[in-house]
Image 1 (cartoon, one colour):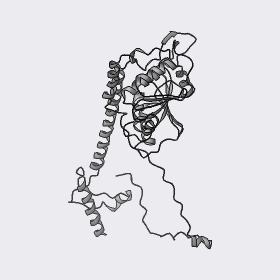
Image 2: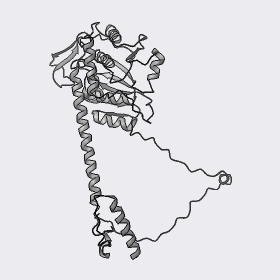
Image 3: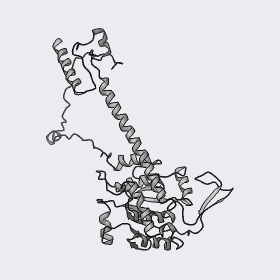
Length: 369
């Protein structure tokens, strides 16, 4: 028994040396008295395990603080990005707000009606298809126009090194250039942001291109600022072992929202296709969103593949990473033990091995560590 105790003492001494925060005094490496053994914990005088656990807890706190700081910086730079294009993609074309005592605004809960005086009521029967990536300034111009025109589109993310939709664009148009718009309602297909914006305004708007999109190089430069502030997020594909979702996700968003931008960037990096429902100020779909989700708040994500729906950009990011990103873990199918052909021939099923009986002393639960 004493030999076993010495062996255990030596082992714990060795383990304590692996942790610089733990201390061990070899002067008294003995077990506690028999009366103290009823706690079912082995105590060694001079051994401190709090150092190792304390260091791990400290590292966890540091990681949490760094994560919180990163999230704060993420939101801050996204807000600055919105300031670079303050009105473009925030309001629908022809936006107007007027008091209406018989109406309750779904966003502000005030008797104020927000609407467009110029947008036609006719909308495309089939959603438009946009191949783009979030960090592209020319794609941003097109998304702003889509938001101001209150259109719904299917987004097929095409980040750099993406393998899901970039090859399709090459097959359809002959080159990997973005944005690339497909309108299944008119068979219109085109590259070039200015050409796409002109088509959208003439087909689904009042024919007048909004001022923020008509300033030539100034428009392009200001549309590039968010990409610089966001350090290229939404530009590069993030390789994941997760399969492509069978059904596209659904995202309620508008272009200038800083929180929606963060979610769109991640969807782009993961190459997850989604149907974009634009709900800029003055959009009629804000009332529809309240009926669907109970309130008007963006971003709002619905995943028809899992039945999940959620607000809050941080919750959406966590969900995307766990479901379609690095946190994805494929389900392991349970293996069924097969009966050998010879045994099944004689209707004999192998019996389980006889359990081994071991005499052991049952100790009381410990409240001490």
